Structures are given as C-alpha cells and as structure tokens.
Image (cartoon, rainbow, N blue to C red):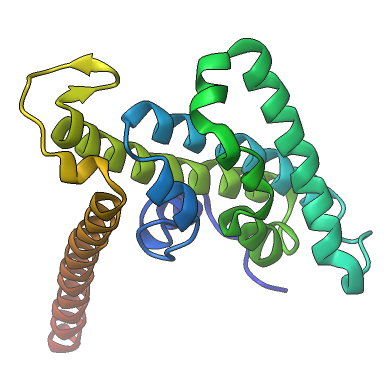
Length: 216
C-alpha cells in the first residue's frame, strides 16, 4: 500500500512543486485567454477550484466502484456535472463574472488540470486527501492566473482589478502576444527560483550528511 500523502506534501505540491500552470504547464487555454485582467483570472481560478474539490471528493468516494475500463468517461461526466453547477451559480449570483469568463467556463470540463488530478490522485487516495489536493491545486492555479492577470492589467491597461492607476499603458500586454510573453516570463522566473531553492536544499542535506559522517 502506498504511503498516504501528508497535509504539507499536498499543500506544497499544489501551490509550488506541482503548480499546474507554472510547473506542469496545464490549463494553458484559460491561462492565456483570461489573464488580461486580474478579476478574470481570479474568477476562473475560483470556478476551477470549486470543480476540482467537488469532483475529487466524488471520484475518491467512487474509486472502488467505477470500472477501470470506463473511468475516464465517468470522470468527465462527474466534472461536467460540477461545471454545470458552477455555471448556474455564477450566472445567478455573479453575472458580471459569468460574462467575463464566457466560453472558457464550460471548457472547465476538459481542463487538463481537473481531469489530471482525477486520474492521478483522487482515483487512488481517500476522500480527505483528495479534497485537500483539489483545494491546493486550485489555489496554485488561481494564484498563477491572478498574478499574471495583475501584471498584464497593470502594464496593459494601467489598472488593477478594474481600478485605474495611471494613464501609462503598454498595449502589447493586452494582446495575445503579451499573454505568451507574460506566461513565458512567469515560467522562467518560477523555474529559476525553484531550481535555486532545490539546490540550496540539496546543499544543506549534503552538509548535514557530511557532518554526521564526521561525527561518527
């Protein structure tokens, strides 16, 4: 039996070590299409997080019931159900966000982040761990989209969350090319920081091991 992941491992994987946008490069369509403004990135992230948590919980509950041969179609049906729920909720209570997300909202059904977690985690782990995995993967997804949205909105529109900051604008960042540039920049910075932290951690372990050997 595989070891049950700890809270810390799940949290670090979702936000940092396996960040779906910056590390695994999943969910690129909404990442590129909805980060012209911070609020659209935040809205998509929140919607995807809701679907992630709910689908992970249900798939984990049914993991010993769903036949292996039809697991992917079953996962998609479950994800589609919760996507429909979140669409209805947004349309009823947050129509402005619903309009901003547009066609990207129903595309949550085929978001690789959600289907990937269903297949690689929820179908193999208990309900509690699966719920946490959905939460922190969703937070990692939301954080990446929101930060990209902030950068593009500030530089491309001179505003943040719809509030004007100044008249200075770099229109490049409001265009599709700006989305690719910003995404690439975020991945580069994330990779550099991650590699530096990993190297520091490895060096620290080596020093500890060397000290232990000398003490022995």
